[in-house]
Image (cartoon, rainbow, N blue to C red; front, side, top):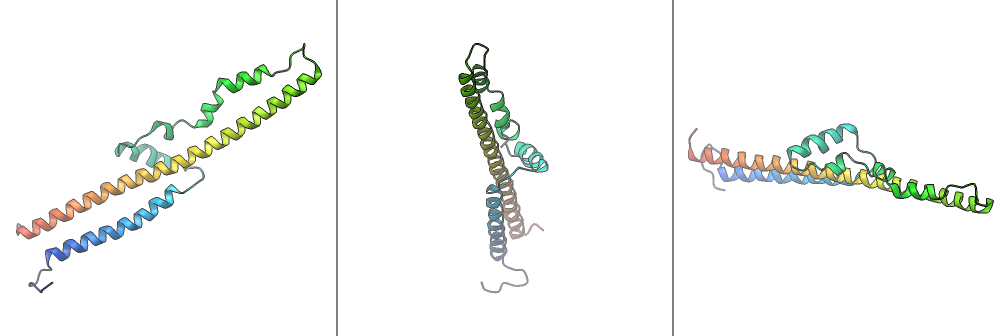
Length: 162
């Protein structure tokens, strides 16, 4: 750009501001991707900050992720409990049928524990993914405000209202 006096050119300032924003958005995107790929339990403060507070502020609140774990839903399931009750040994059954029903009941308990663990892990993964989406939405709003304020300041400088 040709030299234009003491003030730096407005177009150069605008490009500098937008390039800075793009660089920051790349860095924050890497952070969001790392958060979405996390496993393990979500800390309580992260749940409170991102899944409750910021999720509500960004209109992304989901009750199923924030509050109701599938483990409790599975435990309250009447199908498995009624199957276990049906297999309980009764006094008029032979010793052989009691052993069979006990082994089937043990198998059902094993399947139940396995399903509970899988559901709990799925909940944790979906919570981390939702935390990442909330962070991404917050960053989108931040970059939008940054772009609007930067444009407004540069337009204000261009009109010479200072």
